[in-house]
Image (cartoon, rainbow, N blue to C red; front, side):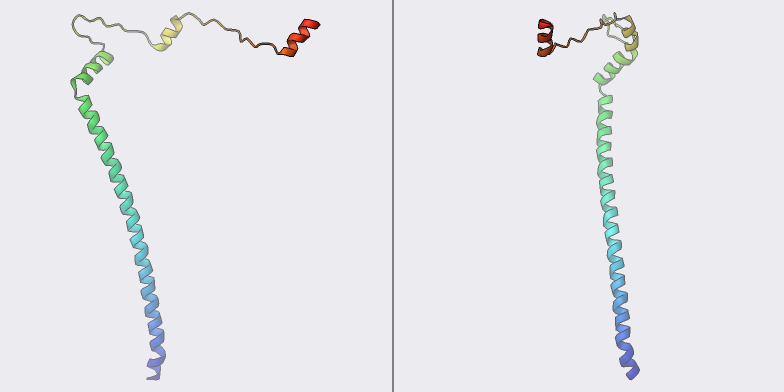
Amino acid sequence: MKLFKKTLPVFMIVCALFLTLSAISTYQKLNKAKVTIEEARLSAEKLENEQKTLQDQLSQAESSQFIEKQLRDKLGMAKGGEVVLVLPDEQELKKLAPPRAQEEEYVPKKNWEKWRELFF
Protein backbone atom coordinates (compact mmCIF):
# COMPACT_ATOMS: atom_id res chain seq x y z
CA MET A 1 0.00 0.00 0.00
CA LYS A 2 2.83 2.39 0.83
CA LEU A 3 4.43 1.62 -2.51
CA PHE A 4 1.16 2.39 -4.21
CA LYS A 5 0.84 5.72 -2.39
CA LYS A 6 4.40 6.68 -3.41
CA THR A 7 4.13 5.59 -7.03
CA LEU A 8 0.66 6.97 -7.67
CA PRO A 9 1.71 10.67 -7.69
CA VAL A 10 4.72 9.84 -9.88
CA PHE A 11 2.51 7.86 -12.25
CA MET A 12 -0.01 10.72 -12.42
CA ILE A 13 2.76 13.25 -13.10
CA VAL A 14 4.15 11.06 -15.90
CA CYS A 15 0.65 10.65 -17.38
CA ALA A 16 0.00 14.40 -17.15
CA LEU A 17 3.36 15.11 -18.79
CA PHE A 18 2.62 12.59 -21.54
CA LEU A 19 -0.85 14.09 -22.17
CA THR A 20 0.58 17.63 -22.21
CA LEU A 21 3.28 16.68 -24.73
CA SER A 22 0.71 14.87 -26.83
CA ALA A 23 -1.59 17.92 -26.80
CA ILE A 24 1.29 20.24 -27.79
CA SER A 25 2.27 17.92 -30.63
CA THR A 26 -1.32 17.74 -31.87
CA TYR A 27 -1.63 21.54 -31.67
CA GLN A 28 1.55 21.99 -33.75
CA LYS A 29 0.33 19.50 -36.36
CA LEU A 30 -3.00 21.32 -36.51
CA ASN A 31 -1.26 24.67 -37.11
CA LYS A 32 0.89 23.15 -39.86
CA ALA A 33 -2.22 21.71 -41.47
CA LYS A 34 -3.93 25.13 -41.34
CA VAL A 35 -0.94 26.74 -43.05
CA THR A 36 -0.89 24.02 -45.70
CA ILE A 37 -4.62 24.45 -46.31
CA GLU A 38 -4.26 28.23 -46.63
CA GLU A 39 -1.37 27.86 -49.10
CA ALA A 40 -3.42 25.38 -51.13
CA ARG A 41 -6.41 27.75 -51.11
CA LEU A 42 -4.27 30.66 -52.33
CA SER A 43 -2.73 28.47 -55.00
CA ALA A 44 -6.19 27.34 -56.13
CA GLU A 45 -7.39 30.96 -56.33
CA LYS A 46 -4.33 31.90 -58.36
CA LEU A 47 -4.88 28.99 -60.74
CA GLU A 48 -8.58 29.87 -61.11
CA ASN A 49 -7.67 33.46 -61.99
CA GLU A 50 -5.08 32.24 -64.48
CA GLN A 51 -7.62 29.86 -66.00
CA LYS A 52 -10.15 32.68 -66.33
CA THR A 53 -7.53 34.87 -68.02
CA LEU A 54 -6.61 32.08 -70.41
CA GLN A 55 -10.26 31.43 -71.22
CA ASP A 56 -10.76 35.13 -71.96
CA GLN A 57 -7.71 35.09 -74.23
CA LEU A 58 -9.00 31.98 -75.98
CA SER A 59 -12.43 33.47 -76.59
CA GLN A 60 -10.76 36.64 -77.89
CA ALA A 61 -8.46 34.62 -80.16
CA GLU A 62 -11.42 32.78 -81.61
CA SER A 63 -13.21 36.02 -82.54
CA SER A 64 -13.26 37.03 -86.19
CA GLN A 65 -11.82 40.49 -85.42
CA PHE A 66 -8.73 38.97 -83.77
CA ILE A 67 -8.22 36.56 -86.65
CA GLU A 68 -8.55 39.39 -89.18
CA LYS A 69 -6.08 41.54 -87.24
CA GLN A 70 -3.56 38.68 -87.11
CA LEU A 71 -3.95 38.05 -90.83
CA ARG A 72 -3.34 41.70 -91.55
CA ASP A 73 -0.45 42.21 -89.11
CA LYS A 74 1.41 38.92 -89.31
CA LEU A 75 0.77 37.75 -92.85
CA GLY A 76 0.32 41.08 -94.61
CA MET A 77 -3.00 40.07 -96.10
CA ALA A 78 -5.67 42.59 -97.11
CA LYS A 79 -9.30 42.71 -98.14
CA GLY A 80 -10.19 43.13 -101.77
CA GLY A 81 -9.35 46.62 -103.04
CA GLU A 82 -6.97 47.42 -100.18
CA VAL A 83 -3.25 48.04 -100.60
CA VAL A 84 -0.74 46.61 -98.15
CA LEU A 85 2.13 48.90 -97.27
CA VAL A 86 5.08 47.15 -95.64
CA LEU A 87 7.65 49.37 -93.95
CA PRO A 88 11.20 48.23 -93.22
CA ASP A 89 12.46 47.49 -89.72
CA GLU A 90 12.99 50.31 -87.27
CA GLN A 91 16.78 49.95 -87.56
CA GLU A 92 16.53 50.25 -91.35
CA LEU A 93 14.34 53.34 -91.01
CA LYS A 94 16.91 54.93 -88.72
CA LYS A 95 19.59 54.36 -91.37
CA LEU A 96 17.43 56.00 -94.05
CA ALA A 97 16.47 59.01 -91.94
CA PRO A 98 18.61 62.14 -92.23
CA PRO A 99 21.05 62.64 -89.37
CA ARG A 100 19.98 64.90 -86.56
CA ALA A 101 21.64 68.27 -86.39
CA GLN A 102 23.71 68.63 -83.27
CA GLU A 103 22.19 71.40 -81.23
CA GLU A 104 24.49 73.52 -79.17
CA GLU A 105 23.45 73.80 -75.62
CA TYR A 106 22.96 77.46 -74.80
CA VAL A 107 23.84 78.38 -71.27
CA PRO A 108 23.09 82.02 -70.47
CA LYS A 109 25.87 83.99 -68.85
CA LYS A 110 25.55 84.95 -65.26
CA ASN A 111 25.01 88.59 -64.39
CA TRP A 112 28.43 89.05 -62.85
CA GLU A 113 30.04 87.75 -66.08
CA LYS A 114 28.04 90.24 -68.16
CA TRP A 115 29.16 93.11 -65.91
CA ARG A 116 32.77 91.98 -66.08
CA GLU A 117 32.64 91.92 -69.90
CA LEU A 118 31.02 95.34 -69.94
CA PHE A 119 33.70 97.04 -67.83
CA PHE A 120 36.84 95.03 -68.64
